[in-house]
Every structure is written in structure tokens, then in C-alpha cells.
Length: 297
Image (cartoon, one colour):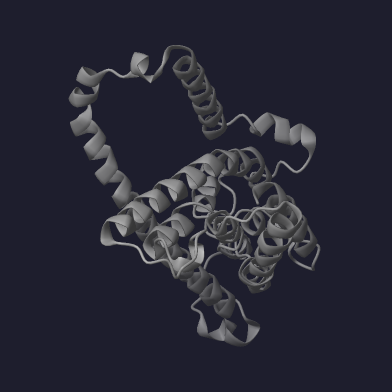
């Protein structure tokens, strides 16, 4: 799904940026449309949904005991985690290897090469290399060679603390996004007030002793309105991500994967749809803050 939806989203964002007044926001539009929230939200929703009969490969009318239901639930959870974690490496590489350079303004290939090897991409490549080495060692010498029981017991409190911290990451991120949204709205109101003050009809209402000089006022207004993305751009992102891409996700999963590729597992098809039809990724706020590009938007 990543290999198909990302190029389509980049093309849709670039096409939207050709509309009047949206050219300065080309990188943001391309990144917001191309990269959905493909991990945290769909993973949580699917785990809460659980082994629904529609997601089972076997018939829903089979009579199973409570012990069998527990086993089916555990197998379903393990399968979902493996599928999401396996695809997550590809999504991270695509986000930070393609989305971050584009958001930073690296449209050309030469500019992209200068920004592609950022820390998240290096960490992902290192993690993939370490995982492949671990797999090779386990295949050659067995899994017991890498199991250090004493070390695992010593690190268990640290692992528990990290697990609890991970549960708090999404709520804290949502709170920080809310704070940024409030700040952006306040600046938009301040920019609107500056515009009203500089209106010729209202010029008589402004005390000349308290106003700025004629040379400073246009600069102040430009500073306030420079980073305001047109409302049309927000509507376009909403339309692409929440209307068109859910349709694309259905066609991709039910048409391409199931009918052409022969994928019959309903869990795989559901994950492919959920990873493609979500809203813009939360990481886009982090990317904007790191790059210093369109952080308020």
C-alpha cells in the first residue's frame, strides 16, 4: 500500500499546488496528502476491533469454546502486530526519506540527496541491518545463543518503564498539537486585526501616536500573514485524504490485492485499507518543527 499510495499522494499534492495562491505550499500539500497516519491509529482500531468474524479466514458459524476464543484472540493480536511492525519500517523510510525532504523544500533530486540521510532514516537503516544480522545469527546458531536471561531480568524494570511511557506518547502528542493549534488561531486573529486597523475606512479610528511608522506596518502585517495557508488548501487536503483516498484504498485492497495478486487473508486486506485511507500523519508536525517550514499550518 505504501508503494502505491505515496506516489499517488505526491502527484495529487503537486497538482493541487498548481491552483492560484497555493504554489508556496507545494511541499506541505504533497506531504500531507501522500502520508496518512498509517500506524498508531489503524493499529489501535484494529486491536480494539479484535478477531471479528468478518476478519477470520474460517467460517464465522464455527462453534468454538472460550479457550479457543482466547487462542484466536491471541493469534489475531500477534498477527496484527507482526503485519504492522513489518510494514512500519517501509513507512518510516518513506516518510523521512521522501516526505521530510519535500516538506523542507527539496523538490529537485539534487536537493533531495542533501536531506534524505536524516537521523530517522539512519536509525531505520541501522535497525533493519541489526534485525537481519540477528536473524542470520539465530538461523546459524539457534535462538538460545542470543538469549541472556540474567540481562533480560535486569532490564525488565527499564523495559516496563519504556512500555508505560509509550502509552503516554500519543496523548501527550495530541496535547502538544492542541497547544500549537491554539497558538496558530491566535496569530490568525491578530493578523485579521492588523488588517482591519490598516483598512482606509478605519484609519481615522487609530491613534497616530500609538501606531507604528508607515515603513514598519507593512512588515508587521507581512510577518503575521506570511505563514497563513489559504483555507482552500485545507479543504483540498481534507478532500484528498478523507474522500478520494478511502475510495482508492477499497479499490487497491479489494481489486488489486485480492483479485489480481490473490491475497485472500481478510486481516491483510483490512490493514492495507486502513493504512491508506487515514488522515494526514501526526509526524508532519514534528517534520515541520525540525525543518522550520509551515510549522503553524
